Length: 231
Image (tube, rainbow, N blue to C red):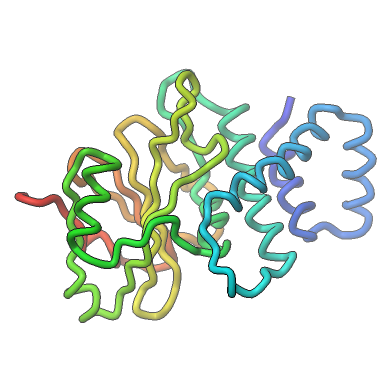
């Protein structure tokens, strides 16, 4: 059975953080443990799903292998934790630090919402909620609301229906740091702060949706800009 320590070792292996001896030992173990090898294979399979989730600009520079491996490792961790550590309760748990797949990846939106009306319509189409964002206040505070993304793979995916209700609002703080704001229906998923990778989390509820702002800021940057029309 895959254990939490196995996941962390595979992440380190994928990112090239193991010593030569540690790498050789893990590779020998992979040959002896089909379950571990299958999990590593899933790393490569889910990497394509992660990349398909983003819309790339044709002129975008090629990402370095380091960035690709970090994103792949995050998919592996998310997949393995959901597959092997899901609690019997309907709420599944993901380590906060595994949000680095988004925060350290290409950070390109699938849907750009650069006006209040576009933002509102996206909320209606996706969640059935007329979400609002104060773009004037954002501009005055030098906060950039980049657009929306949707996780692929098994992250947050409903086990029975296969549907993925999670959406992420990509943003930048005034200092240029990246922020991912995760929107989800209640009871879909919860974040465990045991492993943070240096990230902080600020949470609220907007229009009946559970919302987590994930980044490196000590105070919420994007959450104060968000709301629901009429409230």
